[in-house]
Image (tube, one colour):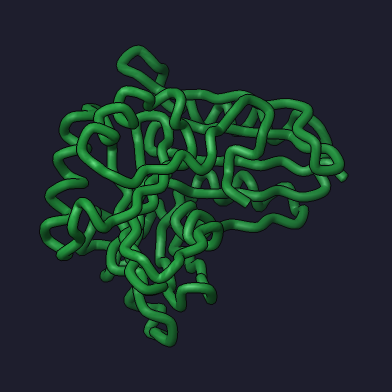
Length: 238
């Protein structure tokens, strides 16, 4: 079975082609000041026609989202809820929903319609999910106050969890290790997590963000690197 895995971040696209669960091809595309307009869209088109795929898995790490408790059913208000966190464009964004039964929360998020349509046009099985839900599903909380940090290229998402309850989730641009470290410490003070009795776990692009990791280690007592996104490994947590 040939499976195409797609990860959309705030400034890039990462794809993997897996055959029988083994990664046979992987590549990343990121935009900068000199990148042509519609660069990511063009790269997506090229990836989709590479070969015949049996299935596609799409993960969005775009930070247009909101978090709601399990049981919330007013789905028509999804755009309005997301608008409290980020600007939304109903004409150009598709409203999506991911459910996390493990921690009993819902994620409403938007995904660019131009990407959505191109993927759906292939008329093969496709599964869309939000990175926060996928990440949360991989977390095993042990009744402690915990901060779980998933690092991407110039981006990060993190959960604050206490006694198996999600206290906070955020998805941020990371342009400065110092600024992000300050934000983490500020967040701890606001939610009442003591720095010495909080356990920190880092995942994702930990090697690429080793400066941030080393700075964090100067301040926190309990830090564990759980997962590092090495080449040709699954870039999304299982």
